Length: 266
Image (tube, rainbow, N blue to C red; front, top):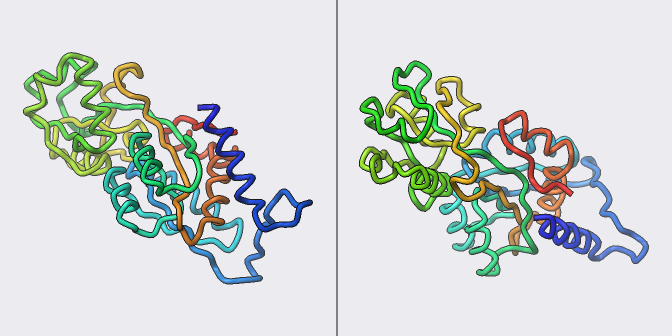
């Protein structure tokens, strides 16, 4: 991942210096009073709702920028970008979809991992069924298990982890599919399901759920959030600055408070 970070830094430097004098190495910070408000359009994985809101609040104080964020399943957002939806910064919950966009020449430069996460199993706060490991989910008290759809990163990770534990075939007939990880969280918080599979940051975001157990890191693919600028975006200068903020110490500090792990900050 270090190589990715170095590549991104080189890209940001070259991108930011374009059109300036030979002796300048930085883009001046815009003066809010000197021009119109500039919109930065962000597509981000559903699990990033809270921390993106934090980044947005911090960033909008730094200049004449307004962040317009759209959230959803990474797969859905990636397809929208491929279909030409206006986007300046894409933050995925899976490197697979970022790679697809790179292959389609839809991204401007390399991607960088801005955050990481853990996969956990949750239950309603007042639920009576308990589990300490994936094998415990075979108990009769777990009749409905909320899980993101297979083409959604959270759903992919959960199925990998359950297969690794040797229980996938035993419980898959109890799955209640959801469009994204936040839909899983809502289903469990409302006690519509006895358990569900979400990220640690999601479990921390809702007091109506309790964490049953955390899946071992080696039981599924690494949960990483790569971010990249989108080719043809109208707000790429602002997106570049927002990405720099996300990778800064202040931006990364926001992650821990929301239950995330750090990304590949330079």
